[in-house]
Image (cartoon, rainbow, N blue to C red):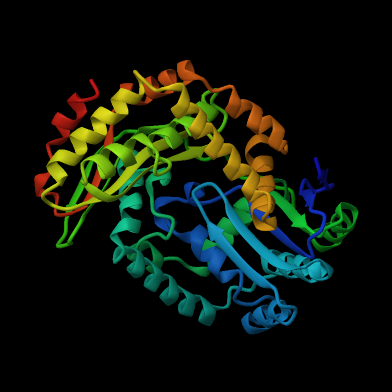
Length: 418
């Protein structure tokens, strides 16, 4: 394994995954905080902070930041999720010191200028509007909110127009001070990188970063239920799902295999039964969302108004059937897809960097690919039946957006899993 990890005196973990034969590197800082660390009044602040970090520091303007990275042919970007926020860059290996310096600067010395804040607030408002106009995007926020109502885990990452309007500079600084401590961060790099050099760069660049940690967020409380919004659309967009599992659950790999088997590809049960055999949808797939103390499992489909009434019962029956009669060939095919995806992703410095950072934040250690493959290989029919049974015993969640009139009642749907 090519991975090395060092923890600095302030708690910042520095991790590298050297890839021979490449000339570029991806480097980034992953922060173990996201939307679920917000309060209701400042929903969206984690995402707005991510935007504002690029809008000027004590020594660089917003334009100077992007000109510096693009002058060496690199790229700088970021994203916010419910439990993490990431800031990452891709550069040639020789330009890694510049990328680290830029990351350290925006994370420690951003000024959050009032004019820039108002301008970026308008940009994020446009982003929220764009999401609302994209039904196959916003339906996942509706699903998340129905699974976790009235709590941070169910709030949209972007926030709402109402909460965005109230986000102030003190609110951003308060969130930053509470959550961006060194011991909550991982500086990871993959590609043309030498561990000792990155460790030394990080030691100088992040020396002043305090080690403080925030309080643990409120536990995720799955409730489940029904969320339907009638909208004048050509297609009905829906997600049907259940309470899932956390990263640390013993059935983590079994659920990953099950999801692939059920709706992970063109040979999957759902694709073959719902699209190929019955022609009820253009697209259908299953997905998993793993969190530190819970998770979600879901199935997304887009269908026409006439097909909606037949679609949900077919999905329900297919889900039930996988708990009873999966074949060894299906399981082996799903395991092969998962393992191939892992191995193929290792050809990308960006994927390897992100995987390494996520593993350190979630598991506290890097996971060798051989260990992951071994755990996938250990999944058998009994494990698939067990994890499918665990899902179906819980209360389902249905989120639907579009012409919802053809859908059966939630009570009828719930009875299919009783």
